Length: 393
Image (cartoon, rainbow, N blue to C red; front, side):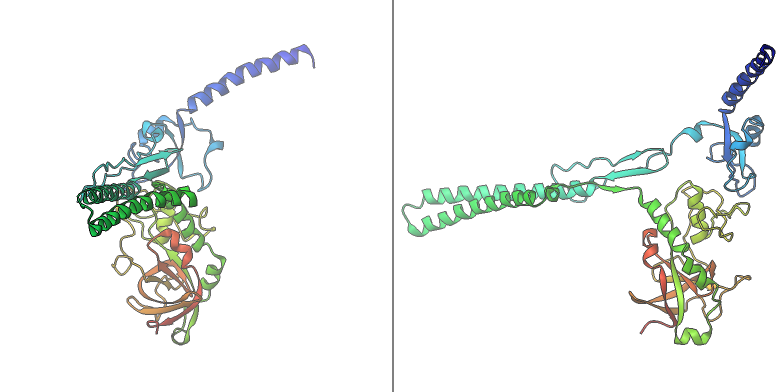
């Protein structure tokens, strides 16, 4: 390679690299942002995480590299928007109100709950109130017992001094003294014994909450994504005769997920309940539900919006109620399974009577959804069994 070619390459590199560096630095103020629309169809206001206004969108035109656009849900769901304080600020920590006891315990002052987070999106909260309450009762009871033992010990001593040689009074004084000493020994020995068995028995640890929402979501997803569920869904509606003699059905748990500002949560709502502000038909929940195009994530709604508070029948969901299957493709209820009907579902764990209060938009054939109060219990009710119409005998 001659010197002339080397000079040309160096000149080109000198021009290109500063441009790349400037482009990257400039684009750092804008990034691909998932579009979230309000019910009116307009762009969300700037303070709503996930959206930007027309003016903001135009100000970032061409500043985000196309090869960095998220492609999970296609190329039309993300817009180049400016970074603002609302995007960078972490979610506020959960707030807890200190308990107000009707009966005060001397020396008991509740500590505030503390919450920690790694990314500002998920909090792990430590609530010490129950531990502090139990510890206060224990210490208070221990103090009362010790004071009573000391009083009895002194009473025994005084009685002995004034007995005047009376054998019966001396015997009574000895009983007082012996009983008080034995009581003190038992109080001390019980604590020492617990420490020797396991030091954790005398420690009152705070209750830790925070991760249950994610575990519950994973349990609900796992119950829905069973390969067996798909087999039963394609079996067609049960006949009246089958429901009389007993038809093989597959049950999955459905529940009210804990609110979170994530698309996974909005997909869970679409799967378990009705979207309070409608769903986004331009997206699907393939990432979570094994390429099932029947699910579209709900439009964004904040935690003050009520959700999962009623079924298709208008009743609130509750334990021992189910969502019955619908036919495909018209999504009408399977015949012979109507609202307020009672059915008996028998599994290896036993038989339970359920009432039909809902229908599942993606529950077809010989499948039912069983409502559980905690999403962590979704997997516990999932499985095959025999369903008959009418209450269990």
